[in-house]
Image 1 (cartoon, rainbow, N blue to C red):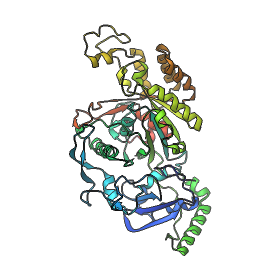
Image 2: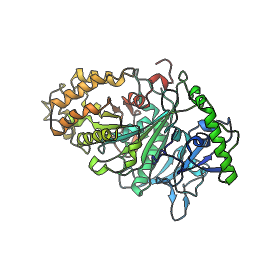
Image 3: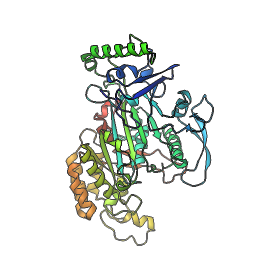
Image 4: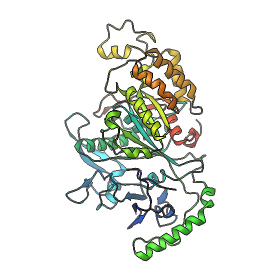
Amino acid sequence: MIYKCPLCLTRLTKNEQMARFCTRHQQRVDTFHCFPEAMQTLVFCTERECGCDDSVEEGVFLRHVNCKMRNPFWDESAGEVIVPGNPDTSRAAFPLEFGSGKAQQVWVQHWQLGALRTVPKNEPEMWFPLMLLRATAEKNGKGRMGRLVELAGARESGKTVLAVQAMNHHGYVPAKNTTDSVELDNYIFSRNSGNLSFSVFLETLHLNTLLRRNAKEIFLPRATINEPGHLKATFIRPAPNSRATLAAGQEKSDGRLRAAGSWLYSLLRQLTGEIRVAAGQVIRSGRPFWYTLVLYDTAGEASENEDLMPDLAAVDRVAVVVNAAEIFGVGPGKSEKSIEVAVQRIAKAKKRGQPCDLILTQMDRLKPAEKHTPGQTENILDLDAAAKDEARVCLSDEDWRKVVEIANDLNDDRRKESQALLTKWLDARPDENKVLLRKSLKNVKQIFFVWTENLPPQHEPAEQLAQPCSYGLAKFVCRCLDIKWENINQRSDD
């Protein structure tokens, strides 16, 4: 079992080092080399049965020594991490502009602010919760408890909205249109490469808390900055009727070897004075866990982004995003190259040997409307420019019905139906990029239809009547984690 640093995706072998800190036992910080057998013991808190190993927000945090992904609050001149505000709270005031160019003082509240005030502050590398590391290697009996997914596609094609909604429990719309069906937590990281990237990072923290609190005043997230080092992790608690522990048989099968290796490693480190570990600490079977989905948002066109983060070859799968409206000529917009970029990203995933899925976002822009007959473009001369843009074309009633059925079907992937629909749409309005995308479908595992309703139209906070909810999101998340909806559905009446 080889863990990876979830931030830089480096394999944590014996040449790498980790630091461990527990917010409930702050008297010690342990640093250790990442020998595979020892890692399965040393990443956990040395205090047995205290429960801190199973928490996301309060418990064990880890730091990959010499990780290139630095803490966004690291102050180089001061040589320490400086998070402004009251040290006893998880909020602070920051000047945010929300893309308007005019900054305003905003109280940002998120659990990460409080955590970063608690962890040691004298090193530049970013700390992250234990559950995030566990997702890179540990299994839950059937497969890994987490998945690392590259979210690829053209700028403003819908990647950031999808990732933010995956961290918002209101965002999941299962088949019966109920809400609050999942219990989740989150972790957000963006490297601080300047005022813009730092501001977008803080805005994401702020928006995430507003969505979790069902606040009325929310806003549209800005697109991810075109640079490496952006991730959004969603931790989803298993449902009560789901197996919420690691398979005991898996750990017992090689438990003696692990215990012996861990004990020997601990003894050697105690003798050398490099680390202190409880001599009786062994791997415990039946550890609770959270399903963990880590989305690495790679912004920008493929030509600009080709070698942006070579380490992404270490992710488990690739999800390529296409703005569905572009297929029908609804636009243009900043995502008008989403098909071209998708073709290149699918090819790159194939070259890496990574499974690849395709996500058609903004499907609601193609929803049949009463203002014109589905499939027709007549009688739009009297509409304003925005209405003309949307009225150029839309799906037939029959196609839209199929899209909704496929997006809401959490039991069957309906792969052949979704591919048949997309193939028909591409063939109806062929051009060079659409022909290439059609040929690329043979390298796509599954096609998802996703759209978000009640999405705020503006980047600045304003009152919203309803929470954004994303259709097709639950299906995508379950597919990535290789689980069924009942594994995370907290509502037994669904």
